[in-house]
Length: 258
Image (cartoon, rainbow, N blue to C red; front, top):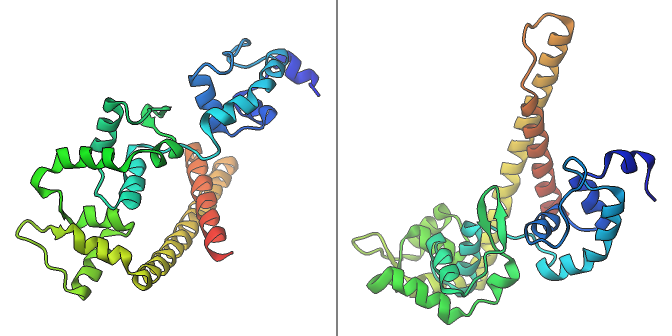
C-alpha cells in the first residue's frame, strides 16, 4: 500500500528494490539494461511508476539470475579453479573481445560478469586464450598461477610444494601436471580447506575487534565534541566503514561456525 509520503516524495533506489523483491545489484543491472524506467521525480520513482515496475520483477531475475556478478579478478579465479588453468584478468578481456563472454554491466566503473555465463564457457575456448598468452609456458605455472589453479593462498602452496618435493625450474615455475596432481589429492584438499577456513576465522575475529575498538573510539570523540572538549567532530565516514567491516566479519564468523 502506498503511503502519503511515498506519493509526495517518491521512492528511492533501495525502496524500489524492496518493492520489486529484488536485490540492489539486480536493480542496478536492470536499470543499466533499460529493464525499468528512469526515475521521474527528482531522482526518485513516483509511487505510480514504481507500481508499474512491479511486473518487471520476474523478467529481472530471469535476465540476471540470483547470484551477484563478479569482476574480472574473481571471474579469472573461478575459471582457474574449474578448468585447472592459470587464467588471468587479461584472459577475461580477450574472452569478451572474442564474443565468448558477455560483459553484463559495470560496478564502480569496473566490468562485471554473471557467474552462470562464466560457468557456461567452453573449456577449450578458454584454454585457447590462455595458450595464446603463455605460448611455450602453457604447461608451467608460477606460485601465483598454482595458487589460482588450486584455490589456495600462495603461502600455503609454497609450503605444500616444499613438503611434497615439487621442484621449480630456473624461472620459478612448476609443472602444471604436478599442481593438478595436488588438486586430485582429496585428503590434502580437505586439510588445506580446513586450514584456510581457520585462517579466515582468525582474520574475521581480528577485523571485528579492530573495528569495534575504532567505533568505540569514534563514539568517545563524538561525545567529546558534543561536550565541547574537542574542537572538531570525528570523521562521519569512519562510522560507515567500521560498521560495514564489522558486518562483514560477523557474517564470515556466522557462516563458518554454523
